[in-house]
Length: 336
Image (tube, rainbow, N blue to C red; front, side):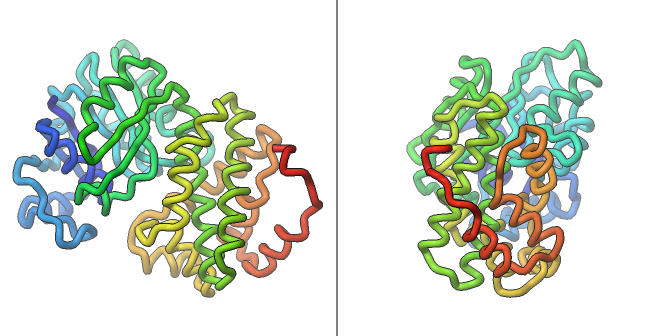
C-alpha cells in the first residue's frame, strides 16, 4: 500500500519504520525542513539514538507529494497542529483514502477530538470528498516500536471493515492490532491519560512512593471513564488497550514525556522549565484546558485532573494538591 506519514517526530518515524518493514511504500513529510534534511542525510532521528532507519523510507518537504496517490495517510503531528495540517492536506487527498490520526489530544476551545477536528476541516474544504477516518491509539512508545519489541494497538473506526483493513496493514509478529468502533472513547482515553501521567510523575518527583502512584492511576482511569460514559462512550473501551493499557505505560515508563514532565514539576520545577528540559511536546499540558471544559460541560467530577490543572496552570503547590485529594469527602468505590 502507498502510505503518507505526516509528522516526523519519534512516533511518526516509528510507524513509518514499522510500515516499511511490512513492505508498504512510505513517504514521510514534516513541516520542519531541517528535520527532513537530517533524516535524508543521516538516516537517523535525533530522538531515537542508535536506530538506523530503512533506506526505503522516502522523505519530502511537500505535503502534496506525501498525499497524492496515497491509499492511506497517517497524521502524526502534535495535537495542537492537527487542524492546520488537515487544512494543508485537504486539497491533495484522493477519493476513498483512509485517514488515520495517531495524535492524542483534545482541541482547546472546541473540545473536539482529533478525528472531529479533521472532519470539520474536510467537510468545509472538501464537502464532496469520499474518505474514511480512524484513530490509532494504545500503549505504544516509539522507542520500543521502532526496535520491534512486542506491542499492541487499537485501530478505531465506526466502519468495521476499515478498522480491519488498518489492522491488516499494521499487524506483524511484533505488532498485534485490535479493532474498536468506539472512536470517541478511544480518543478520550488517549488524551486524558496524559494528564494522569503528569500526576504520576509529580508523585514520583515528590518521593511519595508506589502506593500513591497506584492510587492516582486507578482513580485516574475512574474519572476518565466517568467522563467517557457521560459522553456516550462504551465502558469496555476504558478497560482496554487505549484506556488502562495506555494509562499504565504512560504513567510508568521512562519514555513518557508526560511522566517525566510531572517528575520534574514534583522536584520543584515549573512547567516551563520542565518542558524546556524535555525538549519535546508534552501533550497532557495541551489537553488540560479542554479536559476541564468537558468536565464542566458534562458535569463530571474529575478531581485529579482539576488538581493537575491547578498545579500546572495556576502554580498550586503539589503538596497542597495532594492534601486536598486525600482529604476529600469519603465515598464508595461502587459509585463509579
